Image (cartoon, rainbow, N blue to C red; front, side, top):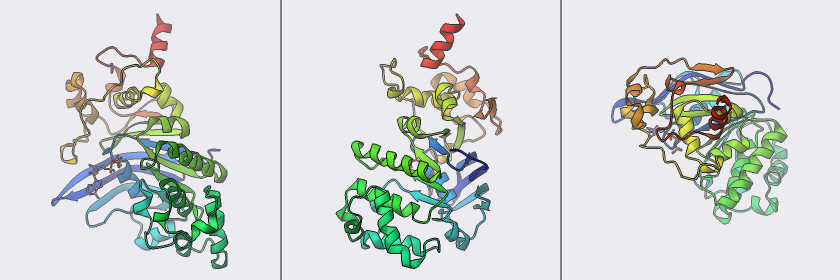
Length: 346
Ligand SMILES: Nc1ncnc2c1ncn2[C@@H]1O[C@H](COP(=O)(O)OP(=O)(O)OP(=O)(O)O)[C@@H](O)[C@H]1O
C-alpha cells in the first residue's frame, strides 16, 4: 500500500567528485521521490550514477573528494547538510542499505550474530536484553533455517545467497522506513537471484517500507517496481509509474533500454545493442540531452541545449529534453505498444 507524503524526496541533487584536482559532475539536477510502501526502481547502465545517488542518500561520500548540492529530505530530515552525528542516527533507523557484494560488506572476522547485534547497538530501537532474541528472529525472517547455528558462524562459512540474507537482516535490524537495495542480486547465481528478490518483496510488503531498488535489469523492474526513474549520465531522463514507463516509454534512452531487453518483447527476435558507451565524467555537458550523442542519426539534436525542467506529457510521467517527441529507431523498429497504436490509427 503506497501512502501519504514522500518518505524520500530528492530535489535538484547534484554530486561532483574531485578527480585529479578537478571537480567533475557525476549527478546533475536529480529529482525523485519514494512514498512509504512504494518500490521505486532506479535504472540505467553501469556508470550512469545510480550508486552515486544511493551513497548521497546515505551521506557516505567522502566530503574531501565530493560535494553534494540540492535537497535530499528523508522523512523530514535534510541529508545534504546533516552532520556525521545526525547521519549516524538516521542510518539504520530511517534508511537501511543492501549492497551488491555481501562478502565485502560483512566483517570477515566477526560472527554473523555479533554483526547483527552491532547494528542494533548503534541505536536504541531494540533494548539490549532483546538483542539475542531479535537476532534469531531476524535470521528466521530472512529465511535462514537454522538461525542459532548461523548466528554462530563467520561469513566465509555461508553461501552467497545466505550472506545476502544476512545483509538484509542487518539492513532491517532497526526497522528502517526506507530500504536501499543497490544491485542486490548481481553477485549471485541466477537461481538464487529470484529468491533474494522475493525476500525483499516479502519484507517490503509485510513492513510496508519504501524501497529504492537500483538495478540495470528491466525484468526485475517489471516484476517489482511501482515506479521507475531512468538515469543516464547522472541525470534522470524519464520517470513515472512502472505502467507509464513500460507501456508508454518516451525518452530515446528508455526505449533503447527496453529494446535491448528481449524478454520484454517477444516479437523482438534480434537482440538490440545500444550503440556506444556512457561518456566519461569529463566529457559530460549536462546542458544537453547526452544520450543523443550515442544515436548516430540524432547528431543534430544532440547539439541542442535542453531545459532542466522536464516535460510532463501525462500526469506524473516526466521526460527530459525534446527528442522524445519524434524519436524513431533508424531501422523502423516499433515497440509492441507503438505497433498497436499505429495499427489502430490506420
Ligand atoms: N568516489 C568517486 N570518486 C570519483 N568518481 C566516482 C566516485 N564514485 C563514482 N564515481 C564516478 O561517477 C560515475 C557514476 O558512477 P556510479 O557508480 O554511481 O554508477 P552506477 O550507475 O551505479 O554504475 P554501476 O552499476 O556500475 O555501479 C562514474 O563515472 C564513476 O566513475
